[in-house]
Amino acid sequence: MAGPILITGAGTGFGKEVALRLAGAGHRVIAGVEIVAQVSAVRAEARERGVELRVEKLDVTDAGDRERAWAWDAEALLNNAGVSEGGATADIPEERLRRQFEVNVFGPILLTQGVARRMAARRSGRIVFMSSVAGLTVDPFTGAYAASKHAVEAFADALDQELAEFGVTVATINPGPFLTGFNDTMFETWKEWRDDPAARLHDHAALAFPHEQYDPEPVVERTVRVLLGEERRYRNLLPAGTEPATRAQLDAQWDRQLNDGRRPDLVRAAYAMAPGTRAAS
Image: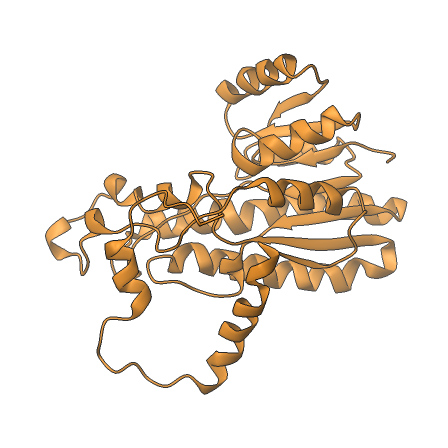
């Protein structure tokens, strides 16, 4: 690979592990992290694992950071930076909704614009979006996050068609429920809301992510393969075994009827599920 692999949101979770895994395999990697404090932390972890890794402060919502990143001439870009705002759609405060889209949609797309133009000029490159199964389907209390990932899916699809003639490929990674802490934290963001709790429709203190969660290794492994061009599939839904159920959920929308006034199963699950529930192996 001629240029480096640039990974955003590499301070935690999938992004950090993918960056370290690629660096450990000898690839040139630039790990972009949101805040300066994460720079030294990721560098320290790289030293502990005995890998060479370049770490840069890259807040995708910062125009100056994005412009600096364009000059790094990445051969591959993983748009991994993201946040998740949980809560009932009627309850989430305006500033939290806007933040969801600034971080998950506008920042990554504006970063991608500059990177894509450079890739197109040299007729090679690979752009990968860390989307989600929530970019295809929606659960209760994840409307803001899912909406942002639906938007990412639209941009990725358009880019794939628009960049094809310039030698640039685009792909999405669509993780389902994986146990990284990301999903459970999404159901705690209400603690930071500046609103009147008495006016909320739901008791957010009683809610949890309504699915059992899986070990994240398959996402890391597949993302590495996609970034290196070893996997040619455009959409990469994981765990692989959940693809039939997701397809069925999408197909069912064509025959969907108005709700009958009863609490849906997934809403009940959100009230009943314990945070961090592991899926049976």
